Image (cartoon, rainbow, N blue to C red; front, side, top):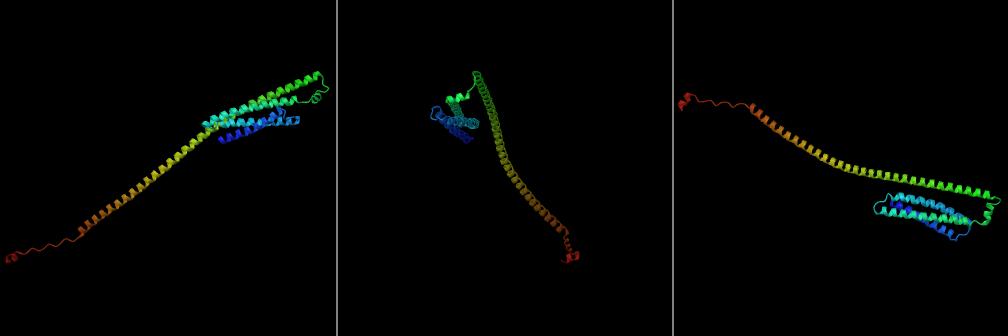
Length: 241
């Protein structure tokens, strides 16, 4: 946004400097040809419209600056508006200068054959046209100011939405980090559960093996034949002895 603001300011400065130089030439008599004066004044009017647009865009862009740049931007916009008013004042003087330079022959041709009433009627008609043009300009200014206000409101809304989207993005990024950490914890828990299951199975197999050995020993001892009893000596045999 700062680069955009600087671009508007640079274009504005270029246009206004060019217009001021040309209008001063007309006012100070450096430019003497009436046709050239007319072209300069017409060109200055167009360029000042462009400068007005640049000033308006710079004012909108300055609202989006941050920190010290915002304050400097507001000061620069105020200076631009002052320079624009001075240039418009020069344009008005140049227009009057050009009107006063109209040669007498042209004035005679303009009012040739006209009665005083006709001249008065023409002057009144021109005055009415001038008033209508002034009113139209005022309406255009009000419309431009309203459009500028609407544009600034839209810019503020867009900026607010941008900040909301940035916060949402940060929250989603943090949530993604939390999900990754939770996934790692769950993976460790799953590995521990699997290890515990394997260990438990191994213990069960050992217990079953021990039980099997015990059962085998019991069955083997039970099925073995009993030893035959040793015959005791008869009584006569004992006597002989």
